[in-house]
Image (cartoon, rainbow, N blue to C red; front, side, top):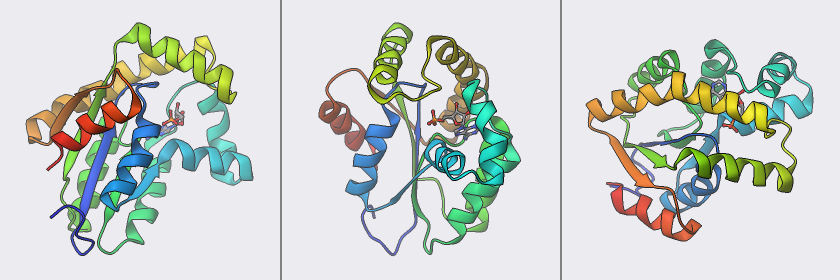
Length: 193
Ligand code: AMP
């Protein structure tokens, strides 16, 4: 039952850079009583704190490429390990077939089946506009035009194919990501079990 804190819940929020995952993830995690885990936020914290992982990740992130699977999976594993039961919203993970496979193994190990994978769908022109606007507002250093295009391309090549995998598993829920934040949020809550 959703909201029952004795039961595991695992939600994935998927979609290209600029789809609004971060904003929706905050709201959704609060509404469902689960912890939000954003691998991008975790990596940025490592970079800020100058950890070993942060030093390895910084230039990769700056270029809009993906940090190696084993580093990301280890980071996610140590967070999931601390939850009993696992109640989590994953934002920005998995992003590669290897990460999706690793997630399946982790969820089997922690006996927490996937509740749903939500795809926030937004057309490409709108995405570029949004990311460049965010760049002006937040000054995220990987939000410049070249890097954005790389991140889109990386998404299309590495991450988009995962949607098909989750569709086949019967857990994919697709929502239109264009519109006011609350409208999109309403669409997401409607499609969740
Ligand atoms: P995000 O905030 O999710 O857009 O992530 C920002 C950057 O962090 C990405 O462009 C990647 O360089 C890196 N990153 C975040 N999550 C992952 C992941 N699951 N796998 C590999 N790299 C990641």
